[in-house]
Length: 117
Image 1 (cartoon, one colour):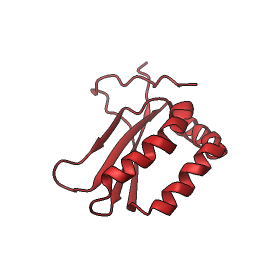
Image 2: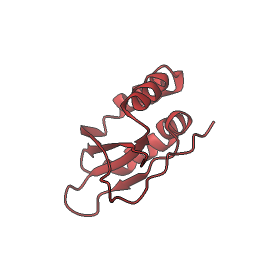
Image 3: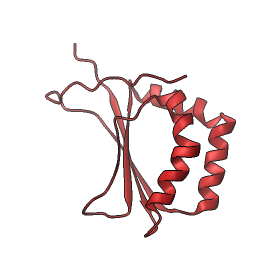
Image 4: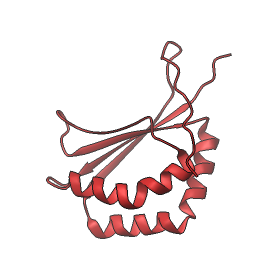
């Protein structure tokens, strides 16, 4: 049987001119923490056309329960709380859109990410 995964597709809209500042803040405070709990994202990208000033990233989970458990553990990490506080102070983000998706039966296999400890 084919192993199914859950994709957490997140798109953040930044205020104009603030994408680079948001990427720098995230890379310094958020990304190291997420690597410890979720591993590498499948994708982390900025828009070149269409909805400009957006950052989209995709995280891979074994299931909704896996996602819930990893995100709950991460939320308790003091370093994640620092990121959330710094993110709020910076005010770079205007909105967030989160879509949970499952790959189709003919999608190329999507590997589970390696967790960085």
